[in-house]
Image (tube, rainbow, N blue to C red; front, side, top):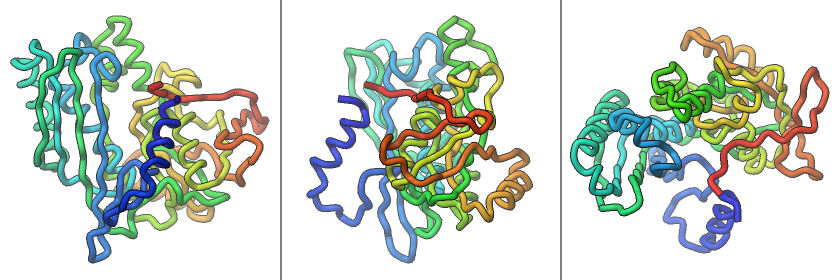
Amino acid sequence: MTEFGLIDHIRTLCETLPTAGFEGIGDDCAVLPIGHDEALVFTTDLLCEGVHFLRTATPPGELGGKSLAVNLSDVASMGARPVATLLSLALPADATGEWAQAFTEGYCAASERYGTALVGGDTTGSESGITISVTAIGRAPLAHLKRRSAARIGDHIFTTGRLGGSAVGLRDLLAGQLDTQAAVLHRNPVPQIEEGIWLGRRMEVHAMMDLSDGLGSDIRHIMEQSHVGAAIDLDRIPRADGADLQTALGGGEDYQLLFTAEAAQAEKLARDFERDFGRPLYDVGRITDVNSKVPAQPVWLQNGIPQSVDFMGFEHF
């Protein structure tokens, strides 16, 4: 069973359970309306030693900041402002002293930087490496929340930044080059919080999510949830320094935002974003009618010509 096959299995198995007012599985965060036209959003992520980080290549303080940042990225992708987190740690004996102290110092420093309270969590021992679990909570007006299911045919597809830099950094770390610019970026992602809130307020922005597994995989989530197709212009993919096309599309952990916007307002949206943030949006494609023969398979274009390639991002299984 694939990672996303397991998620679909869980969704189907549990679909008859009471919702308690929550929206169903399918977005970067679960949504709970709380009255007065507002909602809370909830997300959780695991970071496991040997899968998401190498202890020998990642200082514990930086890992503390990254553990927070990757969860706040999910909140930002909904158009919400993060307000609180819960932190749980499973630690082997050799990580319960100075390592744990430095990790929590980094986590709390990042929490202060992003204005989020640490309101609970859990700790336990581990016999198989470090496992970190963070739950993040955000808040936003219901009308500002962006979902993967809202893309419309004709929408422009945008990213908020260049892609592949984190994957280049991981390559450097694995080669023992710990201090390159890309390696530092990989260890210290910056969640697009203010950008996400800004985009949440824009009614011409329809679907949105964050880029954690790579555009090659993540665009498929929008296609599946919105029941649409997509055409991606490979010539317009914004690549980070040192990233080839495959790395930019499949490397993952960029934590930029991927979103769709109404065609008639796309140019103005891009101008306003650059005015307010001092950097461009990147228009990489269009939302199209669904191709029933190849479900959730984007059309990849180069010089306007379809290419027979399959750019896939990271999958755990």
